[in-house]
Image (cartoon, protein in one colour):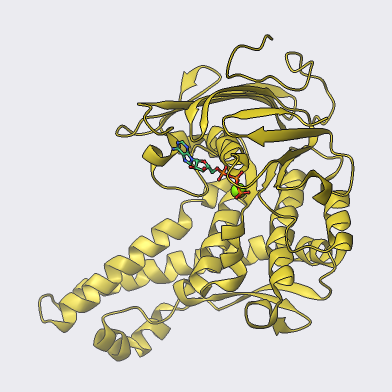
Amino acid sequence: MSASPGLVVTAPGGASISHQGSGGLIVREVTLRDFRSYPRLELALEPGVVLVSGLNGAGKTNLLEALHVGTQGFSPRSRSDAQLVRFDASAGRVRLQGVNGETRFEAEVSLGPREARRARLNGSALRSAEQLRHELQALVFTPDRLAVVKGAPAVRRAYLDRTLGRFFPARAALPVEYAAAVGQRNAALRRLAAGASSADALPPWTETVASLGAELVTAREKAITLLAPTFSRCADSLGVMGATLSYEGEPVTVSEYEQRLSRDLERGLTGAGPHLHEVRLEADGRDLRSYGSQGEQRIAVLALVLAEAETLTERSGIRPLVLLDDVLSELDGDRRLALAALVSGAGQTVLTSTAIAAYPMEPSQSLLVSPGEVRSAS
Ligand SMILES: Nc1ncnc2c1ncn2[C@@H]1O[C@H](COP(=O)(O)OP(=O)(O)OP(=O)(O)O)[C@@H](O)[C@H]1O
Ligand SMILES: [Mg+2]
């Protein structure tokens, strides 16, 4: 591999895929064209912990975002493809090569400001770019994800629903199907209240909401059962003792919906069911949303990500790629060390930080980002 102007190649030996770190999703080569602040980038990555450092605004999160786009088909921070394409460029591209467990892969996502994203995996076009996430698994922590602890219950439910989709791919559509059924029932309630339809239009929607709702509660509880013990252990290693993850809510039966019909009709809304249930994150019985410190809230989200990585590894034998953006700030020295111990060794973890020294162990690879460029820091 040779370097050309504006293009920096780091880490020797990237062309041959070693077996080091096998058993995970390992990205070995990243090629970017007109992606965010990168006009052209060709970068070789190592398995293990890849530390990406650089000043504010240098392009660290952009690089992490590219890894997410290339493995999952969408950005964790923007819904707009136009934002991902470099200013003044007409199209952008992310290409990743590496191994997924024991299998080599090559994924490519093309971005245009107007047309839909397109993705290819091992040369074959996918139906949609987001199909990639059924083939390659990556988990991300970004400071925005603190909303999972700090935000409204809906953010936690959405997080749990995405997680259950990763644990049980066959059930991935269930949350959307349930939400659609609730929407249809709400519309039917409003038509009925306005006298625009007869009473027999409602029961079919009530039955669908009750049955999909019961399935959703079961799937959520199963996901929590898988995740909760590992979450507590990860949080504990990161110094938040007695942390628990639990689900609060029971399925609602058709007869229960019938009993509360007058209230639902009055409000034009389905006032009970899993769309209103709570996912609780607590430490020693106290709600982390209300009582957790900034650092504890950060650790709780991080522990969720790491617990999910561990659970997925157990289920599939392949550790997901773990992307940790700006995770070290607000963590004290002991907690940074605990985090480094948790992520070292297995699979591949890409971690950004403004200071190299903030990471307390020797990473497998240390990269330094400056606008448009990435080079080896060692
Ligand atoms: N579409 C784009 N085209 C060109 N540059 C872009 C584009 N989108 C963002 N940028 C630039 O990328 C830079 C931000 O990059 P990024 O968010 O990766 O920084 P960072 O290294 O993570 O910084 P921090 O440490 O503050 O989080 C900004 O200067 C911004 O102008
Ligand atoms: Mg950043």
